[in-house]
Image (cartoon, rainbow, N blue to C red; front, side, top):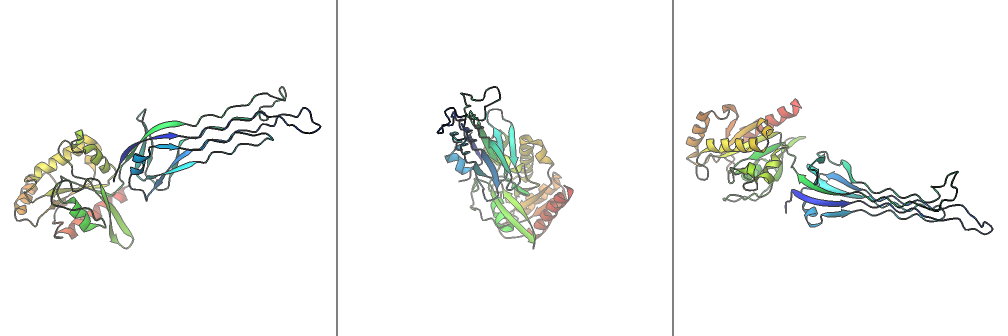
Length: 336
């Protein structure tokens, strides 16, 4: 089960109470204060883990707590601090304060750690409260409560390339053709219900990651067809590939499809439309596709030199398409 948005509730550990105690020793009828401090409560820490791919664990266990600090004891014994809790989350997760809507942190680097809820400070025992004016205080401090916060976690996949298109345009077949990914493939819309990542290895030490984004429908920016859930995974892509169906069966007008995809990206987030992009004119093994491709080219809606006729099913045209995609990714990386 792929889950990319959840609400979690954090409660860090409370600090332990300080101790009120006086020395009681033989032949020392009035011993001084010896109450120890309380221990600190445990923190809750989030850590980005590249081995995590979904937030589904938080869906079933949304409440996260850490241990409180132990109370101080006599003989100046400080209470033991509560154990910190480290929570692994996928790289690409945004942490948002549920009450204010403010992004607290965006985990884009593997292994980075951030304290999300701080444990409470331990209270002082009466030994620590003693002064030259009050050498035997009859009081101690309670521990401070640990932080409590509600958070929204949103996973936005980090991939170099995003495949964008209507349902059944052939994105899953294409990603399985060019990468290591093996998504479910069938001849009906919405086979892919969650994003799929694949790695394209094009040299001994060079590779990039491709994301197969579930099919986008007209009105996706208004959340038609779970549009918001799908569109946000495009936000981090460096390069976009518009996969257009040239078979005429599902989508007989690729010019219309192209314009709709552009509009949906623009209305979701305007800067998406400025990303480098190429067009994969798919299903060119179908006889009717040549005429639709010619009409698409004549429309002038997209630069001729970045339109690549392919058949993801047969492998036709994949090599020049892949070479162009590699160049786009490398050009982007050099520009940063």
